[in-house]
Length: 408
Image (cartoon, rainbow, N blue to C red; front, top):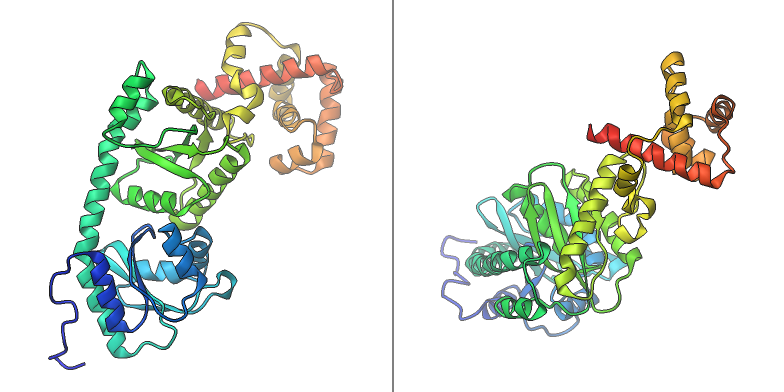
C-alpha cells in the first residue's frame, strides 16, 4: 500500500462493538474481539455462512475449551503469543473450525487480546495491513477492559479471604458484605488449591489466569494467590461430582506441564452448602496438599472425601506416639545389617493393597524381585498378609514412620 493509505480506524468509537463492526466492514468478513483469556469482548454483525465455532463462541461469550485445545495443538495460539504479525490458521475439521486469520493485540510485549477474522478466502496484503491497524485501534479498548476486570477481581479478593478464614459469624453478615461484590454463593461450594512449588510472580500469575479461564469443566467464581499457591472457589449448581473435580485437577496439572513447564500439586476440599463453611473446605484442601507432600511416593486422591485413612493419619500419629511395632523394628535392623530396603518394599506393597505388579512398577523392580522380598519379610518377621487387623495397624505405623521422617 502507498504512504497515503487510508486510516480505517482514525476516529474514536462510542463502543468496542461499533469498532468491531468497522473492522468487519474493512475486512469484508465477520470478526470477534477476545481478551487474553479468549473471553468475547465484542463481535461484529455477520451475514452469509458462519461456522459452528463462531456461533458457540458468541452464545457462551467465550471460545469453547475443545477449540482452544485444538488451536494449541495445531500451534496457532503459541504462534499468536510469539508474533505481532497476522497469522493464517487453516480450518480444523475435527472441531468444525473454518479458516481464520488472527492477530494478537499487545501492550508492548504483553498480549492483552486477539482479533479473529473468519476469512473464508485468502487475505490480500491490504487486508493483512488493515488487520494490523485494527489491532492498534483495539488496544486502548482492551486496556480499559483489563483495568476494569483487574479492579473487580482485586475488590472481591478481601471478601474471598474472609470466607476462607471464617471471618463472618452469621450468614446475614456475610450476605450484607457480599452485596458489594455480587458473588453467586448458592449451590455447592468447594475450594481447590494448586501449589506450584515456586513464588507466583505477576508474569506467572497472568499465565495461570489464562489457564484457569480457558479450562471450562468447572465454574470458578473467585480466585486468589497466596505465595506459591492458587486458590479457587468452585460453584456447582447441582451436587458436586468428585470425579469431575478430580478430572479438572488432572487436566489443569497436565496443561500446566505442557504450556508452562510447571507441575503443580492439586488438592480439593469437601463441597459445602453454606458459604460460612467455605473455610472448612479450604482447610481440607490444605490437608490433602500436606498429605501429598509428605507421602510423595504414593499416588493419593485429589479430593479430601476420597483420602481414606490419610484424613486421620495425624490423629493416629498422636495415638501411636511412643508405641513400638515389632515388624518395623525387625526390618529396620535387617536393612541396616544387610544394606537392604525391606521396609520400603513392605510399605509400597501395603500402599498398593498387596498388588505386587503395581508396587513393583512404582519401585522400578521386577515383580519377581518384590515377591521374593515379601517372602523374606514373612520369614524375618512372621508378617501375614491375610491378617487384616495386623496388616492395617502395620500400614498405619509405616505411614506414621514416613510422616516422622518427612517432618523431622
